[in-house]
Each structure stands twice: as structure tokens, then as C-alpha cells.
Length: 269
Image 1: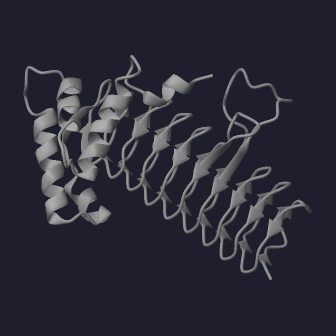
Image 2: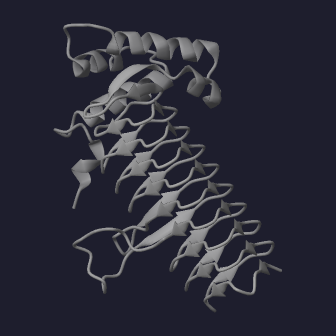
Image 3: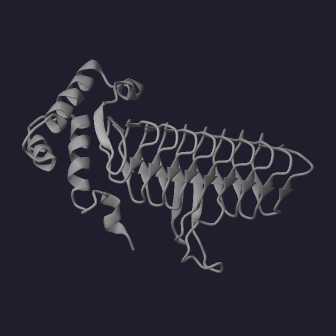
């Protein structure tokens, strides 16, 4: 049976699985489902229709699934959902918004660590094993791929994709897509500073795979009179291209399809 503090307010339609723990003064609204082993500390708010997997931990004062901050969104408008995988850690004062579109979802994968005060905007996809540090602000419609590490107070423009196993230094402002495996810092635009060697190790890349990513980085980002897009296309045309290098060059090519370098913005309604 779920362990529920007597001060918690839980809608009768909410579905709490075995071994769920709900702390003091929590509010769980209608249509919510929470998987086994998930813990809600004090004062957590889980808004309407949020779906949460197993083994997640929500720390005090996190607000999950409240209506998106969109000026044009009418109070009576139907909105979409918010879905969590398993084993996520959501620290104090984190806010995550559902989709603004009725039949769509904001998605949080599994094994993510969201630190104090982080915000995830509507219609984002956060994949797996990400680390999102204190007060990171992610605008709507972004995709944060597996293994990304965002340091404190990183801010991300809407519709941006941050490629897998990237690292963004503190206070970075990201307004265009970042290819996988890179280190970035600075803002508007951020600058590529190198290859995230720690990220490649976390990803389980072999020494040979890491070497090929490093060689590709040198070809793409070391000084050259040839534009980055041309270098990426030349590399993409090589036979026997390493799969990880392929994801890097494809990310560069995709981002070039939008004038501001945000591939997902092509799909804006």
C-alpha cells in the first residue's frame, strides 16, 4: 500500500501504485498516475493527468505539470500531457510544464538528475541520463539528448537541440543546435571549446571511437577557410564513417536547414 501523509490532498481519480510515498502537504490532482517506489517529499504539487514511472524522487516544493507560461494560451484551452520514465531525481523548486497541444506530451526519460530551481518548458523532450544543474532554464520545444550535462544557470532558447553527451559550462546561453560530444560556453552565440572526453567515457565509447570523434572535431572546428557546413558535408560523404561521427555531421547539416540554426524550429506551427 502507498504511504500517504494525512495532510496530503489527493484527487480520487489519481492512481498511486504500491510503495509510493507521499509527504506532508502534497497535492496530487485528477488523472495522475504514479509508479511503484516513487517518493514525493513535502509540498510537492503534481498537476492534472501527469504520468510518472517507477522509482522517481521529487524533493520539496517542486511543481510538476502546471499550465505552461504562454500568454496566448487561454485559461479554458485544453492542454497536453507530461510523462516521466523511471529513476529520475527532481530536486527542490523544479518546475516542468506539459505540452500546450492537447494530443502531445512533454517527455522526461529515465535516470535524469534535475537540480534545484531548474525549469523545463512545455513540449520539451529530455532523454536519459542528463544532468541539469541549478537554475538551468530550458525554453519550450527543446530536445536535450541522452547524457547531456548542463552546468548552473545555462539558458536555452526554444526549439534548440543539444546533442548527446554534450557539456555546457555555467552561464552558457544556447540559441542554436549543438552537435553531440562537444563542450560549449559563452552565449549568443555559444562557442565550441572542445570535445567532452568525460562524456564519451560516460557513454561507454571505446578508445578507437573516442579517437575518431576527436579527429572529426579537428576536421570540423579547427581553423579553416572552408565553412563548417561544407566541412560537415565532406566528412559525411566519406565511406565507412564512424556512427558517432555520423551523428555529429548530421546534426550540423540538420541545423543548417533553419536560418537561426535550430532544426526543430522548422516544425513550428
